[in-house]
Image 1 (cartoon, rainbow, N blue to C red):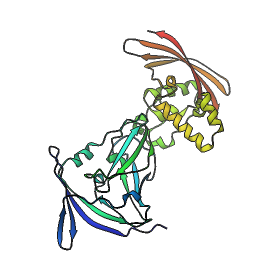
Image 2: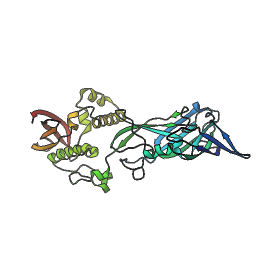
Image 3: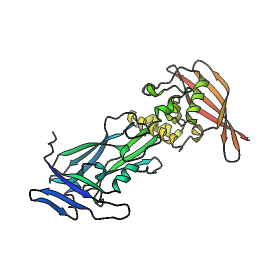
Image 4: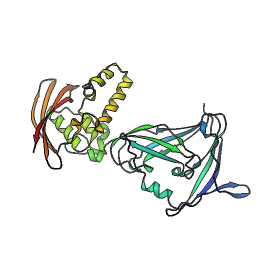
Length: 342
């Protein structure tokens, strides 16, 4: 059983920082003799024994958008893994105690919000508490990731947290957290298309429909044109597509159920970032269903697709192989034939 937090000493800090000039931070500690001033903060004690971890709070489906409309709540936990008392400062406005770093799968870091930058570059008074944790104790709070980082596109992201035990102005002392994977899906409003089987108020019940093979292929291509990844993957048999690769397929066959799921997630992320199977995720300018042939359980759909470049258009024939699984037609393979340029 974790022991409860033993000491919380209310303090406050006058944090003055101008865009045009840097001024030294003054720290004020409230005592019985009045307010005492310290020009430099004390180093956080024994923070090498601290463990900072993050986890999703009430995990749900995440979309791009504002912090208020589509929050991404993250629970931050600071634990004392040592035997000595762990002391650190925690600002009431957590933006002066921590930073989130969010990266794409191509390792591009997302920008901070304008509000966060403005908050840290204007005159303000920052109140903080000095917290003391005995061995085995921990302290937790919840933050909205979108208060810190601009997340305006659906994709797979990775993020972690930096905690500053002596507050933002003393970033030479920092404790890094574990890393989490974040999947941001296309917004429901963007998915509400007459062509696609989803609406803004039914996004959580998005399910493949019993439609003909040519309609399956049509909706998959349209979803890719609109960058609606949920709809794009709706009629794709990811497992069979992955097993087309001899190397991955062999590893997948002998993997545990948990590892198989991780392999499927990685394969899905690779497709979204166009790191493999580039032909199926290429975005055509236009397309025409050429021919559809199918039996009770197998079929093919031939499609002519045009891809626009700077000075020409490339014409290709895609042949999608489909099969029936649980009453739903799914794409499980494809071939591409170049038909020249126009």
